[in-house]
Image (tube, rainbow over all chains, first blue to last red; front, side, top):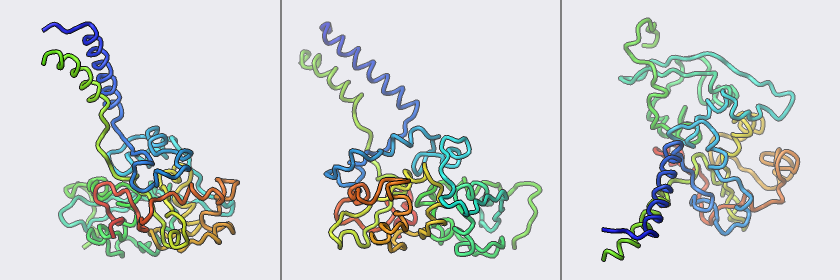
Length: 184
Length: 128
């Protein structure tokens, strides 16, 4: 079968196009929907033209596999972004650097809760004392409640990484040596 | 047949290379506020968490400004916003564009319910 010259050029061009799009896909396969097609914004609204589409901002940030497809904690730590911590000068910006090991996790790996990653974004009062008591081990956290939007589920599954990412919280193997037994 | 194939092949290859990715959800963490909007004849408000958290940490709105961390729990009125409360703390023409730009917030499709949209896999609390 002899292909005509124009056909060959066409094939070559499309091949190159395909290869380049494949390269871009492999480099960063993240895709965000345009505002016009997200099912929330009214595509007839003229203001959409001046709004920043998610992909324009988020593709510059370190990737993740879920949620906004952005690793927000890393984005902050590595200073991809430096969002404001306060509007009022009198506000005390509080960071707490302590981890809590939660061991009542049935057969799942233990949960290691990092205060630092949370307080870099949130204030103590966002969780304490309403969602969680300050005294470790006194709040009856359980997965069923979390899945219904209580405790950690207030944010995880809504704005922070979703509840499909089990091992990001359940990160400490039960067989860990040297972990003191505290909780009954 | 062969001629048809000659012409169709490049077209098909290009079409394949440019084919759009499958449709996904709206952006994770987008909140629709429609407690009052449509009743008052305005389009529902779409609040993009991703846009705001690039610029402000959660604690600014959820601690300093007093926004409850539950979609639908904040009974925000336009009056309060114009007086500089809630969204109006920044949306005053100084920190961010002012409340006169109605369509930038009131940008949602008619009939949307007040809740968190854009659930990624579990839908999570957005479902309840």
